[in-house]
View 1 (cartoon, one colour):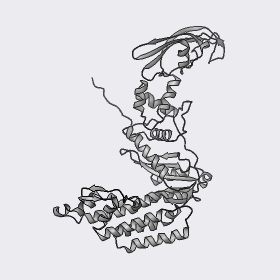
View 2 (view 1 turned 135 degrees about the vertical axis):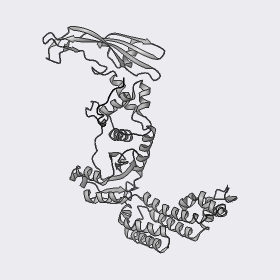
View 3 (view 1 turned 90 degrees about the horizontal axis):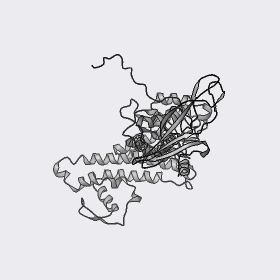
View 4 (view 1 turned 90 degrees about the vertical axis):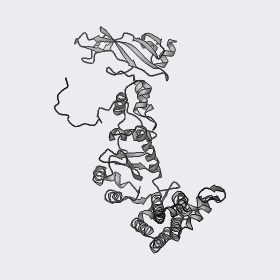
Length: 451
């Protein structure tokens, strides 16, 4: 039995003088005394084995899943014969002032790795306070910025509605899909200061940067990444064209103002079946029939799309323009030709402007402003077209982390949690980091205590 306990606690039999387990209903406790040995005085370096006194220490040591376990360790205090100062013996469990064993701390840090974990859930599992778990995380997980790579993704995510700077800025490597760094704000002045402190040689190694159509990113890249080619994420451009089509639908639907018109089939189709025209035509099912309650008869997705487009010729024209851009966007690496693609893009913009549809004209202006960056997105790396798909995936997981925690307020701690959780090979620090990331609140000032 003792051999099992020794292995369970990761101890060596030669170091033990006494060991006993006490099993209770809700916990499994261990009483341990180490063998007396010659110690080195930390003050003067002399050798001594003189014992001054003993102290019983209660250490939290979670080794069993469904029950708590504590180590009652009878710790010796030695007295140096030369300098007269006292000190405690070396403990294989923890430091001199900690109440958690080293293996428990490691288990806590490992359990904080999944994106589904929270500080409170881990604290409940190990029977400690939330502040204890937070303190362990802060001391062992403080992640530094990683070196910039050849292909970067820039994007932002919503962090906290109570914060002054609500959107945080994230940099990610496109090829290996790991987060390089997260900055507290996407404001221009903050990003200018951030990139200014990155060495010029490191910034000049960046070849491609993928962004959405946010003009501040373009200006920052032009100023700090002279050798980089700016690429607009294809998904955001398709979304812009789809949004323009949806605005046309909403404008047409507003014409159905009376109650009689709102009860018509056309209005109901525009209101509740609009998702059909936002889909790519190639993805619509033309074989499977189903009964549609609005139409009142059996049809397919393709048939429903044709019925919606019959409502208004403007909507039909806007839909055709949308589909033309989808076809333009779908390009293979083998058949791509930049000159042909540029002419095709110019022709598409011209058609938008000549359509006399205000929403498409506005869309054409946006595409014109980002023409070169959109064409730059037709680059491939290891068979994958450059896009912000990897960083959008990370954003989704970050939103889940924030949601599971019911919101996060300390940005530095949240940043460490995001990167620690989302970078597959990110590790915690073995040695404690003394730098505190606790926020300093406002000075309370003088006050009178209630009697």
